[in-house]
Length: 460
Ligand code: ARG
Image (cartoon, helix red, strand yellow):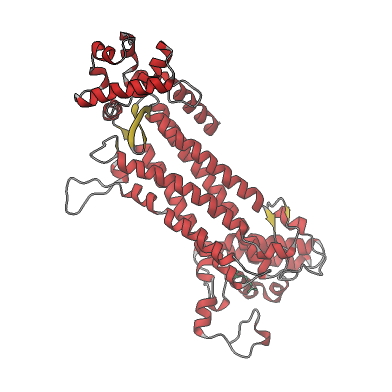
């Protein structure tokens, strides 16, 4: 049997494989809420401008509400023969209200319909992610406030570099996530124009009011060019690019959590809720959730690259290629939402082991820069010379197997005679972090103020 929605010129139905490659209902059913909202706005506008009678418009609206309820309750039967969500809904509408259903598609095509549905869907997704990311930021900022002064090693090259505080480290991610939210907000602002009424590609001869449907669906305005409206998917690409960068951030944090929770580091304890045991090694507590957060970006980058590849070189306007925009986005979105939720749970439960972190912060001559800075401040030496002298002090400590604060004043003076006992004041890790008071630096009072400011902003 040929398709009842477009089968007029077809004598027979599609090959079974054709149906398998062509039908999108298995995945685009996720657009049902947006599809019904778009159709209701379209029908109301058609009635408003006199294309549809008030009775037909009311029957259509009621029928669409009934379908929404059927889909919500699981009573709706999706049909592959009807290809996609648009035709599944419209066909059910005809069953429910009769021939008036056929008037809904006046001045509309599935091309502007799907572009509208998907913009609405991506917009909702970005709004949900924004809330989820704010929640993660709040978890990070409150943990940072709790541990604003917990000294830990700061790393470069994964080698202990200079002491920082745990709170400072967590707040670094709060900043990154703020930029991620900013990128998503930008993408949302650009996507918020309505394709509906562009029809197949050229617009329509009916006197439709595109400004009315755009406003009814919460868009800022209708898209200005009908060809552009049905043929671009840059809004999906932008969202995926923003998701990808966010995924990079979360995967770096996940990697740190994995390292920190290892027995060798022992900087943090993860809760039972976010770890798993081993079926053979009874002592194990594996950071599986963090590992999966580290791995999920593969899907998100894959979605971005996949859709870029689908879109490149496509001539205007609509081609069926573009049906391949949805699955990767859905998959990337599911991954992103899980990543954010899992990270939020892990952060809330995460307990830093302050003593281990403090100990590690002092190892590896991490206050060497503080000696060099002291030589500059107290003796007026140029930094390069101070760096060289400090290098000799570190070499002595290293050769004799001691930490910097275990050297004697005489030993230090043998290297640089003008050194006084005051230098010992800068060797401890607490003093080191306390001294980093420059704007954005790790001084605990700085960190406390930043954490408080973030919490106020996030809760405000
Ligand atoms: N399922 C299609 C998609 O997702 C809807 C648009 C179909 N348009 C068409 N001219 N065949 O892209």
